Each structure stands twice: as C-alpha cells, then as structure tokens.
Amino acid sequence: LVTGKPSLLGDSDDGSTIVADCTNSIKLPAGSSGHSLPCTTLSISRGGKKQWKDELYGTSCSAVAASEEIVAVGTADGCIYLYGTSPTLGWKSAAAFRSHPPIVVGNAVISLQLKSIEGTEKSKRTVEMLVVTSDGEFGVYNLVPETKLLYKGSILAPMTHMALSSQNENLQPRLARIQVTSSNKLLLLLSLEANANRSVSDDNGARSGSRGAGSSPSVGVGGSLQAFVYNRAMELWVRVSDSRFILSDFYSVLPTMNGVKQGALSNVDDMVRSGSSLSSLKPSHRGRQTSNGNTAAMYIHAEEEGGNQGSSNVITRAHCEDRMACALALGSAKEFEHWLTLFVRTLSMGGFADHLRLVVDLLLGSPEATTDIEISCCWWLSSASSVLSLKRKDLVKEIVIPEMSKNRALQRITNEVSMEINSL
Image 1: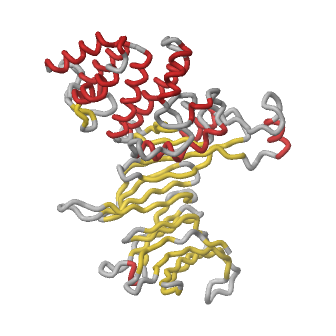
Image 2: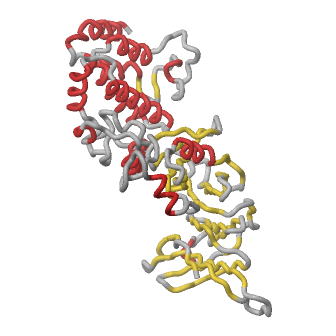
Image 3: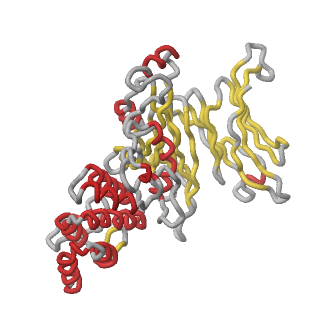
C-alpha cells in the first residue's frame, strides 16, 4: 500500500479541513472474477472522514496536484486524470467528477503542478498545469477557460550540463524542484546525488586518491545544487544560480540578510547555497563568507593585490556582473540595482577609472543605439531611458557617482561624470 502526498483543498464552513488524497494498492475490482490489479484510489475527505472517492484500475498514481477548480492525478502509465467540482460551492462540496478525458503524455508523470491565476477585469481566472515526465520532457498547459499548450521543452539539457561539469561519475543530477514562479518564470532546481546503480566499492574507489580517505567527494565548481530558468523565446535554459562564485567577496553561505534587497534572485540563491559545501572551489580567506556585502574583505584583498587586476578582484567583479544579468533574466529590478551598487563599489575601491567610464557609458546609452525599446537582455544597446523601470540617468546619479566619490584617486572622472549628468 502506497499513499501519495495529500493536497489541501481548503476549509469547509465549520472549519474542518478538506483534503484530496491518492492511495496506490493491488486489489480485486468489485464484481470481477479475475486477478488482482494495481489500483489508484482518489479520495476527498472532510475533517478526516472520506466523503467521495474514485478508483483507477490498472495503474498507479505518481503525482497529484490541486487548484481551487481542478484536481489532477498523474499516473505511472503516462496519463493525467482531471477532476472538477461544484462551480458555486467549490471544494466545500467535498465531491468531484471526471471533467476531461484522460490526457496521454506518453511517459510516467514525475511532477505535476496546478496554478490558479487571477484575471483582470476583462478576463476571468485561468488555471495552468505544469507536467514533467520520466523522459525529461515538460509542458505548461492552460486548462481554464480552455485547454491549450502554452509552451514545452526538456530538462535534459541542464541535467546533462551538470553531469558533464561534475568531477564525480558516481553522482547523477536529479530533479529537486520545478515550478512556475509568481513572475511567470519556469524555475528548475537540480541536485547531484549518488548513482544507485554504482556499487559501494566503486564509490569508495572514486573517492580515494588525491582527496584522501574520509574526505567529501567533489562535485565540480558548480556545487551539488544549481538553479535554471527557462527562456521561452530561445527555448533554452539559462543558469541563474550555483556555487561558481564562492571565492567572491560578496558570496555568502548564510541566508540573505534582512538589510539586503530580497527578490526572486536572492530566494533562488538561498535554495542553492547549501550545495556549495561540496564544490571543488574552497575559499582560503576566513572572513569571505560572512555577509552579502563583505566590504572589509574587499579592502583586505585590494591591499594584497595592490589595486591590480588580481584574481580576487576579477572573481568578485564577474560575480557582480553575473548577478546583474541573472536579476535581469528574472525581472528583478531591485536586485539589479543592488548588484549594480556592489559592482560599482568593487571598481571604485580598486580605482578602475576606465572600467567605471565603461559602466557610465553602458548606463547612459547612445541616441544612435540599435533600438529604443526597453529590453532587459540587451539593455545597454537600447536608447530607452530606463531598464526594468529603473531610470538609467538616476542609476548613474544615485549609485555610480556616490561610490566613485569615496575614492580620491577617482576625483577627476567623478567630476567629469557629474558635469555630464547635469548637462543631460
């Protein structure tokens, strides 16, 4: 007997909880004289008492999801069964009916999610369904008010990327989480786990050698957890978080602090940070992983490297650039602004006047740019006055100039930029 994870449907008028639950078993169908068969029983309970049930013979439930309008059951034989309920009472009726023909997706359903989206004044609520099957294919579908495909793809590319970048062949990528975010981005979280097909002796052999006995296995520079976002226009995944920048002055293994501007990017980073302990990269400076704005470490490294393009400065600068790009990919304006501040601070403390001049040019843009449309992916090529609703002139005035003014060696370029901004 196997019981799936229950889905909370809501509360009834008397305060009792209404839950949908799937149970897998093997039993003889009522009225049958044949052999026992696999059976999935979908039940709805109110206050712990079953009020309604349906039975699916010849298969087993592999995933279940619910919204305010629909319950979806994914099966091991590659079908999805959809159930509706009362249009007036909703799930308070504690009853359901088969609302659609079984949807055939071809392979076992390993992940299934339903999401209700509130409509505008002119459109009603919609319901979207995310399905992932055992062959790595995914699809996002609209169920209400009409059934149609929104977009589809595969998660095999990021899984293959993690496997290729791993330095331990005994570890294989696994699906940790996949979901459509509140900003309508498809987010994928993968983890590296031990391959069940490998023997213990093989695993011990792989761990021995240069790392020494008893040491933790290395999983490559990306760490054991990595996050990706699906770019629907390109139909490709982009990596938005991993442990490759663990040597940066701004990388932290601690959760994002309350004082730091939080958003979609920091939430993803918080999920991925726990995988940094197995990264091949190991920070040598103690104070480096204390906070998200480790200014003290920056001063130490700047003095050690004499203001040159040392490794620490390059890694920290690249970290800021990567976070800015990922914040744009996730549509998080406040986090783009946060990482731009840290980026300019890094350049200012190192006295990189030429690079700061480049940053100002990127932000101010050119009237002869290739487009005047506000686009986040190639924002520096646009003459639009803002990026993610952030005024580009204000970014220079409120972030770049104040940070440059903290370094006396940058007084000349600071004055030049200030005069340029005042003339615009």
